Length: 319
Ligand SMILES: NC(=O)C1=CN([C@@H]2O[C@H](COP(=O)(O)OP(=O)(O)OC[C@H]3O[C@@H](n4cnc5c(N)ncnc54)[C@H](O)[C@@H]3O)[C@@H](O)[C@H]2O)C=CC1
Ligand SMILES: O=C(O)C(=O)CO
Image 1 (cartoon, rainbow, N blue to C red):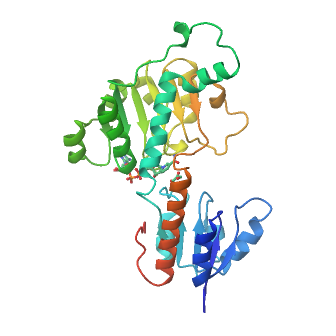
Image 2 (tube, rainbow, N blue to C red):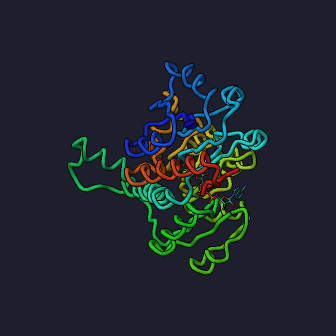
């Protein structure tokens, strides 16, 4: 008998066809208030789940007695209670590596756009306001030759650090679970204490996973330790930062600016002041969002799911 799979994200036709060849598929392109009850109902009879961005809590998963594997189309797994899945014997697979370089590109775009005011000045030109040479009030700050402090020196952290050191001649400091000697040797990077990194960096860049340890790791105290000229970049998860403290630091000039791909609440609450601030470049969580990379992630997630359902070990197993 074919295994039952629930897909809860829009999937390219060839990938859906691969799933349908081996499984009975219930397909939701996205989950919203209108289909949430049908989604919950489908999960009850599922052997496998495949999708992204939806928090799958106990209330949804408790009734899924036959569930064997969840394959998320993301590297981040903070939307899952990993201990609960482990207790239940439900496998969790993710999509590392394939999105690393694309996400590092996005983070570097935020670094350059924030420092050189690319979005603000492009809007200025589009609005037809470029009527004479720009003045000092429109100057940016250099990126090349500056110091970047990486919070997280994992896959994406290393890809950002490589761009910074080799492409832009930047000095790299980092805080990580452990020192990474090969990065130190290749890029002249140094692991330092958090407070030292905050005090010495021109760019502070977050690429940590969201965990109980990293949640709200950057708050008022940490912003106060940063340089007044510092630019804060967040490319991983909004909840690693106390967003109210970030807003305050930007409004009071404690730091110079911010480039943000992620927020405490996504999509943004309409009254969130961050996107409207002149010293903020805000993106709608597009770190990995290129055609090539999103397809590769979905393909990897399908591979993981089918391996798990066949009784094999998925290549990218979280737990
Ligand atoms: N904006 C976006 O669209 C994307 C965001 N992400 C986010 O980026 C995160 C990182 O991804 P990868 O680099 O692939 O993960 P990774 O697991 O390779 O790297 C994470 C690094 O953080 C370090 N770390 C973990 N907890 C720490 C702590 N408490 N203190 C210091 N260091 C700590 C680990 O030692 C590790 O080196 C993902 O978990 C995800 O949340 C990932 C892809 C796209
Ligand atoms: O993979 C992730 O964790 C993302 O945030 C989106 O690619």
